Image (cartoon, rainbow, N blue to C red; front, side, top):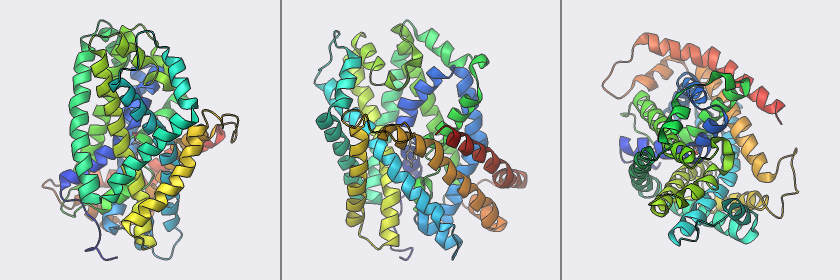
Length: 449
Ligand code: PFF
């Protein structure tokens, strides 16, 4: 396929919004607050920020270089930049990771639609037992599967409309709505009686709670949150223009994602403290603790509609990038039409996603290495596949792409001159330091299996 025939974003803003859309997701709103809650608050945040700056950003830059230089899908990119080698299978691994990740991600995406509708219909009351309500929802085969498939269809609908009319436009609207609504909820949360306690928890570090596991969780969360290690950035970068400055795009994406995670924490944790609840509730925070808290607040019902809409929008923009990565691969490597590629991806993901959805009910006794389907997919994608792909990306960019090409890709576009020492440091980091750290994470995650 020639470059002329390839899809592309209309503007640099389109690229940035799509990347931000991919990055901001359930990872920020659902996972980050409960990881902060269960890992000692501010100490976790500090470690997370260090991981983002020193590890995740450099790897993100590598993915960007690979995508934009090759102007190809995640498999085609490695094939084009290192013809005739096995490096292309880094792309294969990325595609598989997307399918695995999307399969459990859409289940939680389905819950957001379900809770959004329940909030609009005011199904919840002050006497609702939210824990029982949540368990009823996830263990009901019809309800859980129905909303999972509905969420998948929403994703597929955007994909089929194309890069400019589907992905670029949807991200533009969703991201704008998301930013306004989350700031609104945060400001409201600040006025609650327990807000100060929540903020203290978020910003006063307690390093006694930090263990090696905390560091591993922070790194894993960094990869997941920034969408590193599954080809989504490579794919979106391949739709970017050579006039766009790569360092600027990476910085804006990282800053937006991190700010959003912190704002989500500042919106959720004060509310948790004001209701006298425990922040280390875990995965149930967004679907058990928060609905309970909303019920007890003035304007809680409106806030709950906003909140589940935000969760839905964030989940949708992320799953779009996961599906697009595979669709671009099928389109370019197997010459499928966008529609056909979407149908294939939809079919495959539906099967896996249904298994994940049913693992809370009828398939709860079915275990792989002691995990249910849902937990297994979550664990291997978040803790093993993303990191393995990230390691290969690092090695590829550091050792396989020529130094001149690497620097050329980073410095092209934009008005600012990037100092040589920064480029040199980045390269040393990518060649020697990052691979060692990521390899340690992978070994530890494999031990945890
Ligand atoms: N970044 C998303 C989140 O924080 O929820 C998850 C994700 C989306 C990971 C897309 C990878 C990806 F390609």
